[in-house]
Image (tube, rainbow, N blue to C red; front, side, top):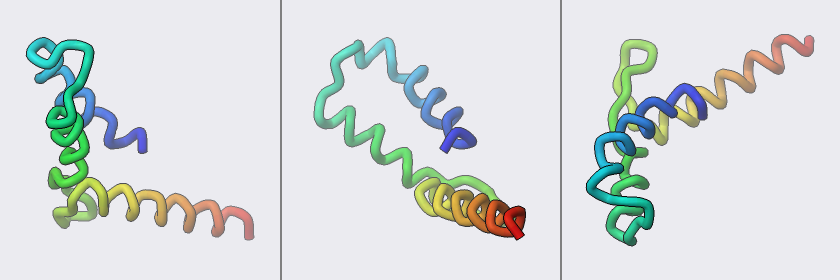
Length: 68
């Protein structure tokens, strides 16, 4: 989800010079691990993976309410 893109952008910017353009399996694993980073949402801390799910659920709820 786009709200979490700055986390990925910051990670990539930090590692881009040392990693180069072609990523190894280990580097791809590091990228995937971003989903385990913690973020604050509704005054609680969640892993990004869970926060994305919560964001999607909230958006779905808003859309359902708007349709009524």
